[in-house]
Length: 432
Image (cartoon, rainbow, N blue to C red; front, side, top):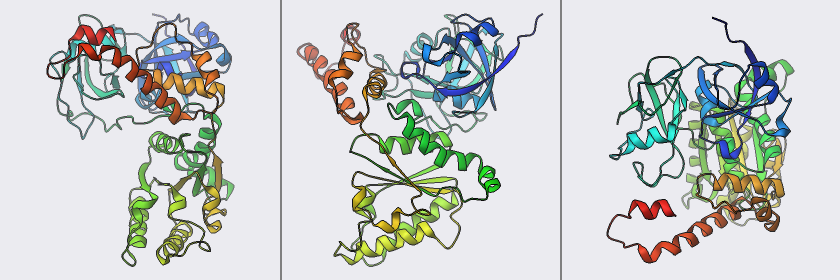
């Protein structure tokens, strides 16, 4: 039997509409080399082996040697954006049975029709034992109140290796994590959730992900890796989102502080809290400490009257400069009033880089719209380009609000038919 040949491609983030669908996008050259047509199954080999269904990439990606896969497939393959993976055509069988369990550390309760719903959703999808399978909750709600995909881990498949879910596949659901389950992060916010901020994400990644994954580069260059990044820009542009995505994708421990919650009226307590946070981050390094509204705890010392604020600023300066090495601990600060921050914080060695997270342009707005509309049932006549043209000056939070408002408006059409006591009939949910 002829062996399938391999090619090596670079991983890029998925298109917004492909998120959680188990799709890999390849350019026509790669499809030709591997003798694939759209809809075929490929094996993706990074640190682990996983499988995905192939589709053709958009024209702007042709001849770039990229493979576009989402956060779930990246985690299944054990790779990050920018890493290289081996691709080959897969040999696969139909799955007779697959066993799914929740990720370690969580329990799951399923509704009566959960197995059927999961089979419908994952039909013709390739899986390998050890993969994370994202399941979207739908009308029949086994996972109530969940908008983002629910990650389940494939603990075993019959037969082994790459299998494809079909109508006859028996789906077994475990309520507790299986012993054999590798510890997986239930993929939270990935780069697919961050729209319209390509260059900003790229800059934050090279400042944070690189030193965490490859500290040897910086040793070779004889320089200290960056220790702090200040993200500034108008409210609602996605500063917190970038920080969460970077922490999640780099596998770092994420500690988030909102500026005001550190403040205490008792002498010395605010500084003590700051010290504890930095100590905790050091113990569980690599870590990212994210300080939101940093202007509230580190205002210019010349302009504040309170003693507490001055002491907190001094403590933060000391912690960020630290006589002890901070190790793999990066501080990300976010603010929409960068001019109000004490200038001593804004010097190299504390916040090495300041990155503006601005208002998205037209292409950015289209991408953000696609991300928010990804799991919404949208009418065929909705014109994204036209919408994006009229949304000049909207930031990510505004687009999110617009989508919510549209959904609530659609819901009002059905409100007269709904009674609060009984369960809502399935027909009405399907009509929406």
